[in-house]
Length: 347
Image 1 (cartoon, rainbow, N blue to C red):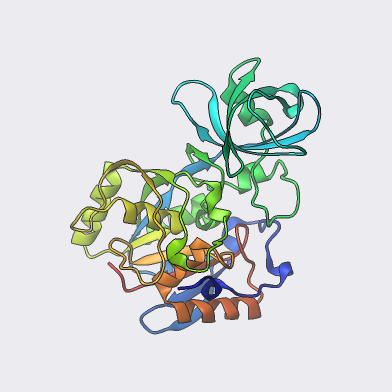
Image 2: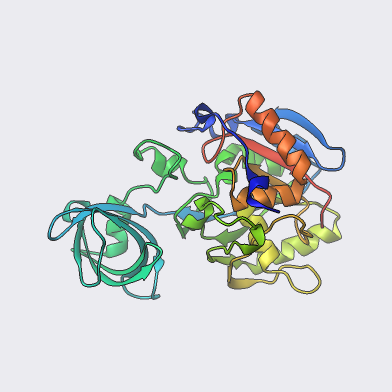
């Protein structure tokens, strides 16, 4: 595939700037890979749209990773924290933006003095290693004064309400700088309804990094390299997948992050292995899916790796037709937008 294969034109007004008042009130486009059919439902219809299945969700938790401030000598600075570079301590990998280039040994004053930082080294590609300091615990200070890192296509400042809404109701493991957005549609009531309908749930963790918004900038998709992200597959989830296969239940991935996690962790027999790892897996057509039967996902940016994954799962032609129909029917796009259920024929 070439980069132009991932292009489409989207009216800017269809980019959702706010979440709906109710998480599960979004539209749900249903794609059936076997028949090439497209249907239009609501997300609350989800429990009845599949036979009793195993839903796998990503329980990563977004932390308020964006820090605003200034250099000690003046000049505005914005940092996006990515991850700690050591297990214990307060050294972080971050993306930095400033009025003038940041250099090693620079001192930064962040969040009105609640945090201070020293640049340890400049790594290129906008990345820095920094050391943070606070009067008390650094992690607690970040949680208190940091800003929710809304994606760049949401053209408004983050608000207090985003701390809850740009987060799944089952988020528990802190480490993401972007939400696994397919999961934003689930409510505790809908999860209970799934259980009552005979569905089961299990969890993996993939800490979503900023690379999820990074457009493909090469002509040939084979030349694109993904940023690596950390994941964990619990033994309970592997056991649930093995049972589901034995019971002829489908495996439903809630989000592209779940697909990438499971496909990154498989053994030679196509069963995920329990454990911790890092993945830079780029799924694009053609691809043989080994674990997942069905996929729930939002509508993704043009020229994005996420759109390439959807095309690999649903087929290029069906995906293109679905996106054109979504635009025609005024679906809401991207993180706070509507969703899609792809009933596949994989695994």
